[in-house]
Amino acid sequence: MGSGNAASISYLYVFFAQLFSYLVLGEVASLQVYIGSVVAVAGVYLVYSGEKRLVSSKGFCYALIAAVSWGFASTILKLASNFGDPIVIALLRNLFTVLLLFPIAGREALSVSRNKNVLFTAIITGALGLGVGMWLFIVALNQLGVSATVLATGLTPVLTRVLSTPIAKEKQSAYAYIGTLFTSIGILIGFYKF
Image (cartoon, rainbow, N blue to C red):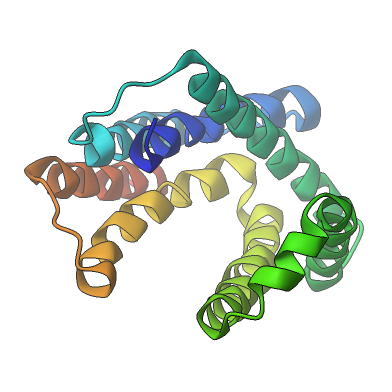
């Protein structure tokens, strides 16, 4: 399937989060946020459309299930942020993830973590993505609401693709740059006060 196709499908989570936040929380975003979301997700699609791998039905299902899961989790995190400190919620969330995944992959994780590069990467990405990033995501959910916060996260796969050029020396297609522009414009549409 390829990471690009997986990202394009799973970032449909923006729409699922907006739907669930409406159904569960009664959150209604402005038309501007919804239009911005469509443009931003179209940008994510464009960034990865240069990748010419076929999408298997199994891979599509996994990516779609991820999108639905992330959308629902974002809505529940917003609800939880009304009752607790975002940093404590982030900590508890990460602890539960460890409890869930350790029995499945703990032995292999211990073996792989002996590699200094893997361990260094895990520490940095864990601290930034699951530590600081998750804490700030929960704060944003509380302050901006689900619809606006998930719209802003549309920049994540785009930044990943753009940063892969200097860091991993990957070459980018014209679609990547056009998609980045679309995503940025979508986010601006969603947040700019006309």
